[in-house]
Amino acid sequence: MKHYTATLKAATIVGTFVATMKALSKIKAETEDDTLQRLLDDAISHLQDADSKHGRGVVPNALEKHQDSRAKKLIAYCLERTKDAVPEWQILARKHGWRPAK
Image (cartoon, rainbow, N blue to C red; front, side, top):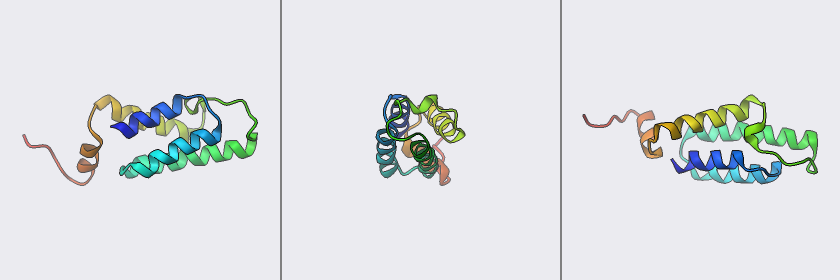
């Protein structure tokens, strides 16, 4: 669950596009959740687009304030995972067919 909370934290911190991209890239390198990796890639791509469009001198803001669907999907996914309070290993195991004993 730490990667989901770390992603949400990175999304709420006011920083430059580059700083946010670095934080998200670090999380992507650490997680084994394929869906989270894909969503992080999409959000990083959005930030790269915004950085190119607005330049590095733009007033920093938090990713959670962006209206882009890529950012919104990442945040929604992480919020859902933290709401359930299910450890990341269990989420990954369930994606591969594991079920808890009854």
